[in-house]
Image 1 (tube, chains in turn orange, yellow):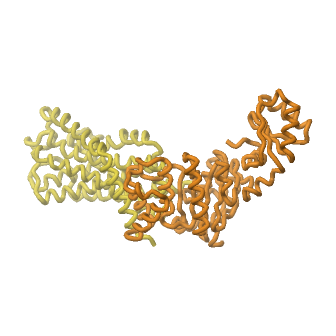
Image 2 (tube, chains in turn cyan, purple):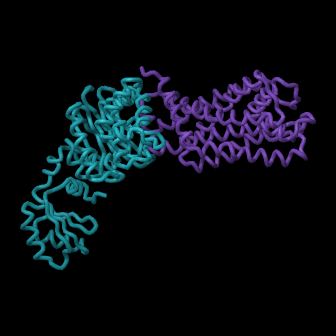
Image 3 (cartoon, helix red, strand yellow):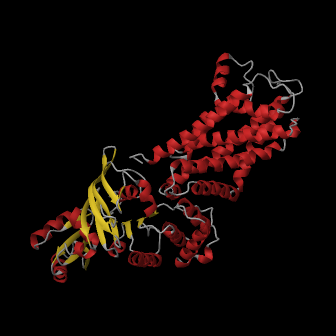
Length: 306
Length: 264
């Protein structure tokens, strides 16, 4: 197994009789930002917990930079920097105390630890808050401390579970920019889970999970290329009837999710014009645009992304 | 190979820093037993002469070592209850994915709880002279030693329970149904002498009985006070040492098992 990639082979995980992960395989090379995209319950947190060594899988193999997860979890732990979805800081400790505690757990100490903490506080723009209790920090700042903490021991793989949940747009953009520069300059692997399309768009490759299965894998552009042309979204209160009527009249196959019809077509602008003219009363709103990853998900699974 | 001492001491230190930043914990662990002692001790002092103790020693004096043990128990429990919450939050997850061995993590937590329990126990030693207990240097050293063992064992007992709980409510139930009865039947509250046969047996099988006995013996080490029918020094120290070892082993095994479960 290569020391330069994460390899996941035929990973399956069940809770009792419920199958959370079903035969998932993928590889992530160094320097790549890889994203697991999926709605709640798709199995991405299960996959995340397995990769972060919190629980062993029911079956399948995981190899991280040449170490087998089932055999040598200790060696893997040194290589991983992890940001969990739940806040991982002790709010009763100061920023520096949290980082020092973390450093000690990874065997860093003394002057080199002090320097490393200083360096990261600078890089994340939190030096002026270093002696404040974490509970006094805003959510965005706390998240920055979390990532600084995960980076403290210079990990080779950075795992982030829903890193931008609860962050406002500005902080999210900063975070994305930071991850991109990190993957480039340090040549590490960044693997994150998300349910946000715009976050997934920024990654090098995206694996789409649905009910434990990897239904698609590729660059955002490759995935979106699976949809020919444009996507038209029609809001209606009479979905079933309108779907059949549209399918009869135009040469398209609309997918119905709740009150929306998703239509994939070559020349979207013409279709919009014709469909509104044909069913002026049944249609409430029409939206038209280039395909997004959400459209890819809906096309592949037939389910809304929630 | 990472130096294991570093993770152990940093986890230990964190417990202590947290404690001093939450002053109410200091108060709650010490106030409740003190109130018990003053109310129950004063109330029973007039009417209750513990079986097998000397005339001079009233109930309030008999009850004093029991109250110190209760403070150790409470502090140990409060220190370990945070494990339940931290496991659900990200903090403990972050510790568990670090390359530190499980036994080191548990040892750090146990030493943290032990230190806190000991600090509060020592505070209570200052009121010992008020009860009529006079102890010298040897006695004090033995007392501190026994208190350390007791605090370590009780913290590990707390950890053993906390590592398998998913809610603090569950922990409270265990505390009321198991921990408080263990304390009540340890000779802390009343001596086993004169109790019904079945109760005497329960008390004989209770490991904390030996803890309380060792603690009483150490307090009265320098004086010739009669302290009733209690397990011997050697037996007491043996049992609580074994108790410490087994609870620590149990806590470590529980922590490892809980974090390697396939259905976490």
